[in-house]
Length: 115
Length: 112
Image 1 (cartoon, rainbow over the protein chains, first blue to last red):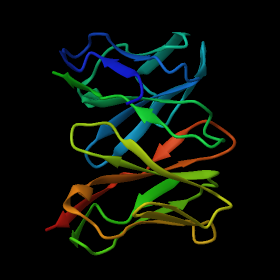
Image 2: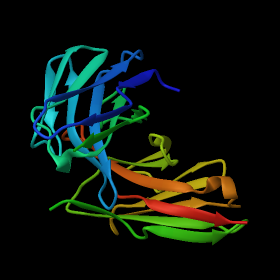
Image 3: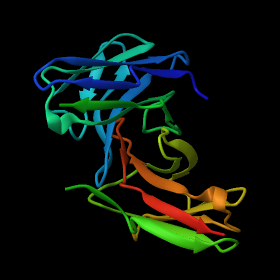
């Protein structure tokens, strides 16, 4: 398995509280992605990073922010969690950008419940 | 708007037969198309990638085709086995940005 660790693996939080999910990789891959997966919607891209301090929005970025201060870490923050952000969150990494011959490696996922 | 559609939410196939899954896309000019497998409670795992200028790719019992005129990819599993039961996701990437966009997936059940 690619060296990707997501933490925490499970979290229950209250509406209105800030939450940060962490993705840590040991592969030194340039690209990192955050997805959420919900029944009926599949995997949807939230934000992605193409280098340290370089990030861009995905399909469903409202209510989320990201930061990447080191190659190995990509943080996803919910500034004020809402029940609609209850989901399973996956981090993925890839060595090259999507415009090249690349595959993505996924973490184990974080199950977040907002009550 | 851009759309990626996988034709079935679920598909039941008898063991030993060929399973064929479909991925259609609209308003998209992909550079690459990828297929992933996802088991319950796990992250997706990469299976195969095909470029826009390739028609077909094979890996063991897996075959992917890519028709940019029809805007469609077909994913075949030959001699299917119960262990092939999983959700299969197609994903598109394009040259102009680094996004990897996924379809909703097809749950495949191989019946013994």
